[in-house]
Length: 110
Image 1 (tube, helix red, strand yellow):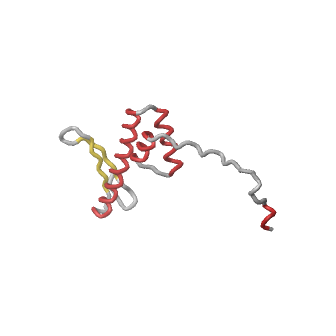
Image 2: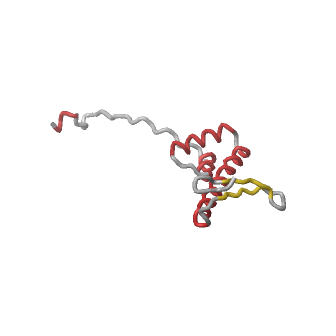
Image 3: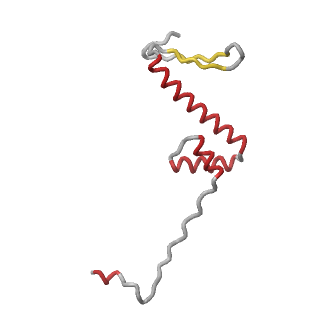
């Protein structure tokens, strides 16, 4: 297949030493490829980091940390790792209303 302005060709192959390489072929050139490469590299490193966390921590701890990360809208490996290591904050205690003679009621200001 030949790349065009509507078709991107992605190839995966082994290099001389046996490592996997990914090649993206487009007619757009280096000005487009460089940012794509940076974005893909960051995303792959984050994904591989999450897989590494699955190896180092329990599935339950990883799942809870990922849920907390989604709730906080933090999607990086570093954030998920911090959330696994750091225990969740305790729930806030219910506020108690103090009633005594010095407290003015709601009708005082009307």
